Structure formats: C-alpha cells, structure tokens
Length: 363
Image 1 (cartoon, rainbow, N blue to C red):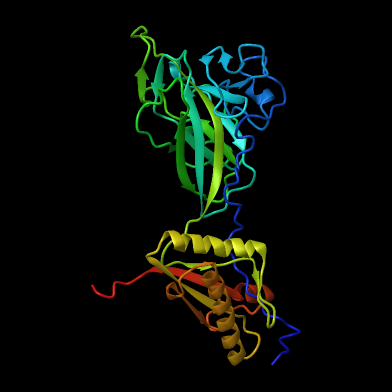
Image 2: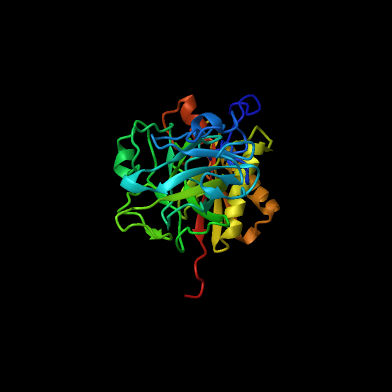
C-alpha cells in the first residue's frame, strides 16, 4: 500500500461559501452615501452612491443636506422624515400613460445558488400623491439593466433584456400602501439561482394591471399619481435551501492523514446544516464518508468512517441531538467519477449528507 503520510487523502465539502448572517448585501441600502448633495430633480444616477435608474424614468434622490426642493424632511412631494439617517429615494409607482420609475443597485456579492435570502425595504406614500397602490416588486439581474423606455418593465420586456434576470416577484400585501405619515415595511424571501448581482425595484405592472386606490378627488379622466419614498433597503442571507432525500456534498473541509481540520468556511457550512436541523425538528441527517481509489479497501473503509464520524461529532458538539444523526463510511465503493484521473479522485474524496423525515414508528 502507498505510504498514506506521503500521499494524504482529502475530503472536500462542495457547498457554496456562506455569507455572514445579518450582513446587508445591498450597497448603500440607506442612501446615506452620496457623490453630490442633490440640487436638481431626477438626478439619482449622479447623486446617490451605487444607485441608478435602469430605464428612462427619472428617479429622485433626497437628502437633508439639500437646500432645494430635494431636501429632507420638506421636499417637492411633501414632508417625510427618513426611516433612518438623513436620506431616501423617491419614485412613481403609478402615473398617467403607464409612466414608471425604477431604482437599481449592485449587490456586494453574487448570490449563492440554492441559498435563501430576505429582501426588506421601507415605503411611504408622499403627501402630494393622488392615490395609492398595492403593487411593488423586485427583479434580480446578472448585469445592470439599461432599457430605453419610460413605461413599465413587463416580464416580456425583461425576457428581451441583454442580461439574465429573475422573474418579477411581488411583495406580499394586506392592503394598499397608503400611509403618508409612517413607513411601511415590505419583505419577502427568495431562493437564489446563483447569477444575481443587481437588484431592481419598482412597479412592473401597467396602469390597467395595477391595483390603484384614488385618495384625492381628481377628474374621472385623470389617471392620477402615486409617488413613494424608499429607505433602508436590505438583502440578508438566511442559509441554504435544503430539501429532504437529496444528497448534498459539503465544502471547505480538509482531512490530512490522521488529522481533522475544519476551516472557518467549513464551520459556517456545518452551522448552516445545524441551523436548518434546529428549525426543522422533524428531520434527521445521515453523514456518509467516501475516499478515492488509492490505498487498500480496509484502510479506505476505516478512513471514510472516521471522517464521517468526525463531521457528525462536530454537529453534535453544536447541539444536535445524537439520536438525530448517523454516520457511515463507504470507502471507495461509490465514486462520483470512475476515470481514475486526479480530478476524478478529487471529486471522490468527499463527505455527503442526506436529510430525511422521521418515520412514524406507530402508524
């Protein structure tokens, strides 16, 4: 048998790197950072750091440093204190002839495929609005959008965009967004596809498709305006989206000969697994260790068992009930790749886990 101290085995976990819990992935989510104090209307692209308008709609930027109609709390659309800090953005979610304004921002990092995130923002209807809507949505894109239109960004319009985009997702509603004094909190969760680098916000529906409530008497022929302030926009990581009865391969764990070494990224991956199991007490987990084809069958069987057991023990040390976890080694009997190349062997040196539901022992 080859000297295993000279040629160590490695088991690599292949889960994506987990961003820190609680970190806001939206750049300048509170609009506090600015290039220039706003002087002119429709100047978000030049004034607010990181933010831009993805269409010809002219989104506004408000800051208490301004001595024009773009000040805080008083501005050309009424009076509103920021939800936090000294600034916010403003845009039309409803206007005559389907005129729309949107707001776009790069994320701090590409979202990890299969992970869950929570998008949250705060919204307030301006005092000079004619009516309120209950249609606010979000789109994620691989690259920044630049669409030559002043009208709504429909799903068909997004299909023809020069970059990959998500489907439009609407914020859940319980009624019209008609509060002109207080900030209303909107939030939803997504599961990432793994390409999302930009966030776009606005009303993606036409006037005919928008739920609009007139709050100020206007002519029956006039469609009216709904202008909203936006503040404190955040996107936070919630953890991987695990499914039952599916095999997952973990990442960032290196095993050398007679050694168990967890890197910080590996610890985060295992904490993700633990947190999911903690939130779902009806689930149990099986940890399975595998090796490559180098070494004897007897050695590989022992090696795979010990490493699976080490990972299981780490989860138990985090607080997982030992009755909810099993570990088993398969040696080199279940390779992912049988080509006997170095790349194939790297894939085969792994630890997997499968989550399943507890079977009812007394049906």
